[in-house]
Amino acid sequence: MAGIAILFWYNEWKFTLPTPVPKNYTAVNFGKNISIAKKIPHHDKPLFLHFFNPKCPCSKFNIPYFKELVKKYSNQVDFQIVLMSDKRYTAEQIRNKFDLNIPVLFDSAIALECGVYSTPQAAIIDSKDNLFYRGNYNKSRYCTDGKTKFAEQALNNLLYNNRVAIYDRLALKAYGCALQSCTKN
Picture 1 (cartoon, helix red, strand yellow):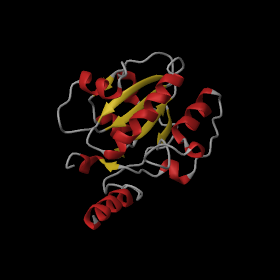
Picture 2 (cartoon, helix red, strand yellow):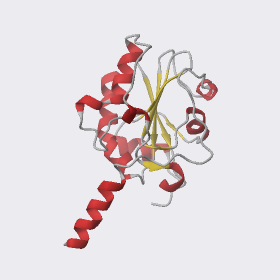
Picture 3 (cartoon, helix red, strand yellow):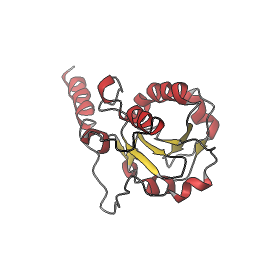
């Protein structure tokens, strides 16, 4: 029992720590034009990119909240999943995990251009292909804290023209699975 308790505690504890910033990481500022967005099929609406790895526990816990966002905002925003995994999955397998019929992208260059280095992360690109937000969904991996629904706050800021939004430091510091280590789980 003690071993199980220690394992549970360790797994909980390690995901409360920020994801280490990779040595070769280049920060991407909000407002930067995301050129790869021109290659992603979307309309004149903002684009919400969900960076997801099926092996990442935090990504798995995030699925219900992401589905909630899609249902709430799909008339105003184009949602797409960006798969970040070395294991081969089909778009249909990923859509089935989410029980959503939205596009699944398999291009890791999108993460690099948006400045994403962990999963789950959200990147919101405005209708002019500029990065509006990149960060966490919530301060909790279970996405249960209503006061810190950062991705939803960012969506509302964009949709209701609050261009000078100020985000909590927890919104912008990556938590979850590092991209390079997600594939080792």
